[in-house]
Length: 276
Image (tube, rainbow, N blue to C red):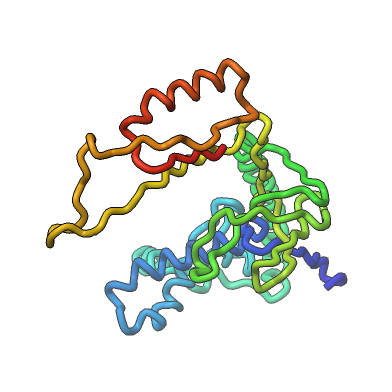
């Protein structure tokens, strides 16, 4: 691979932006297959040669050339070009070249198209980066920090959402992190920073726990076939309330609370218990 100048690039799972070219081709291919699926319901696989020919003939927006032209140094003779040649009746002998001339000409064309494609791709990358950086924000996490991870659902791997607070174990690179996922099949997994967001626990000093109020009601025996009868207000007996002392209240506030509860004690039946 080194002799051919091929570089091995490791990608993050569930982050298709790392393989942008490959994922873009997969999306284009699936959309083209979807367009022919209705007409070729049972034989859509037989249309793949036509689909691939159409893809290789059209210039790619990022490169400015078609894949066929970058590989062979010339445009593919499609149906329209063949029809044009038949109308113009171009003599075949006028395009004949010697083997040496053909090889030299093809080499020059390949060199020119490759340079133009690289320049056009660099311009498109700069343009895409400008649009991406408008909404992108630099984020960083430290080992031990709690985060929410965008992971696939256990019962439906085709859907994903931000799940449980997990813990950062290690920072593997500028954008990759190793997180601890004890409730998953894989106890540890590598995630891209775009799949993570910080998790902030509630500050109990600012947001205290909610007050829980429990009221004990006395039960009545069933009366007739219509279920439990509702006692009249005159039959309700006033019972003393449980201690309602609260450490969060001042002495004046505690006195007002006790007075308020005592004023409504005549319509309560049973014991009321207030837990804070």
